[in-house]
Length: 453
Ligand SMILES: *Cc1c(COP(=O)(O)O)cnc(C)c1O
Image 1 (cartoon, rainbow, N blue to C red):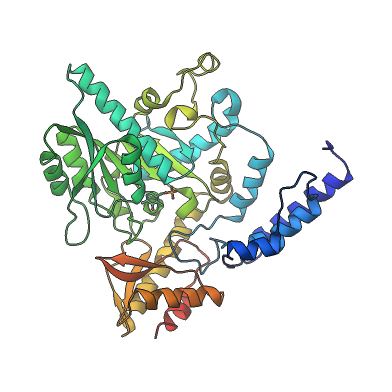
Image 2: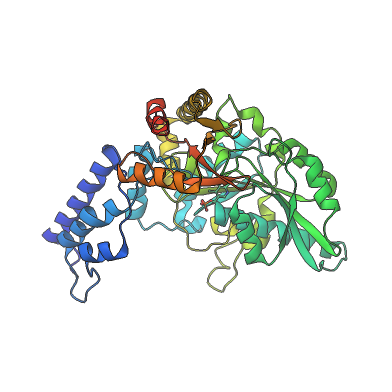
């Protein structure tokens, strides 16, 4: 391997040219190929001699990239899309190029300082106190896990202070609409989930939380309640004020999973749905979803960060001399040690555009969602499943079963028109679109819905 020569200079130039084109131009939709097709096209790429830069890049640009779907295509409407700003996307290259480790203040003071300002914006949107803080992690899954580990640590500490033994089982309260990552966290932590019933509008309310806490299985104790600020399937925001009351009177940690929906706190038209969120003990919001940051980036915030430090700080001979409480060390706040400064692309874009631009972009996507709702209601062949609260619109095509939805989705992808996937609501197949991309237009949705007639 040569340190630097004409060949590596050429390679750097061509990789940058490709990245620049990708950032500047309309994102392709593309779609997956089978393993056999990829083997035929790409062949073996990891070889003793190496392919060389030109050939390796060719196999990527000609075959591997087109076999992957770009989540920032404006008609990618499945799951939760991603839609990084150009500023955020290009700055991700800088972070990748710079070998900066975001674990500790010693390693990454400049990064951590900037990331903390970006975290503070989210904490302010939520109305969390000055004391609040945390770090950026890979996603909602690891953010939720880290917050819940801190919650259980705190619950254990409080019991031992009170001279009480650990309960036979720790449980957390969640609802039907809670994200699958919460069940996954429960498995990792070996704790149980007690389901509280949502109300008729599918919203988890304080009375149901209080009832679930009171009705917990004999011998168990509740260490956390998980409220969802924007369910992934339908965009429902739980009754955060009522849940905060229930948590306060039971003395239980309130975690808010706003991985998808939390971004909408920036939108004045829906901010009232989040009332009560300022009382949470921990909060997760994914900038790689509705805050226009590249994958992967989740903001994790705690009301009292020292509780998280007690749970997450790692100790080792080589760490203890540099990790203390006089500086902010992001690795203290999640289940992580080495850490890409993954909040930096988000920070750069926020710094470039300003928070007003974020507010306006999110409001714009909400308006497209409202227009989509109108089109669904107006089409006699479609049925709106639930009034959209955020930017998910869920509907059914009359007379269709799961196979019909799947065929339709397959056809749209094959034609390069859109990525949609069927979902399930009330045990029945359904469709949902999730609109977070400011470049998704009402016309895009009109065109897609017209193909259902
Ligand atoms: C997406 C999502 C998650 C998981 O986040 P990842 O970033 O995919 O790990 C958790 N909760 C909710 C509500 C989500 O929408």
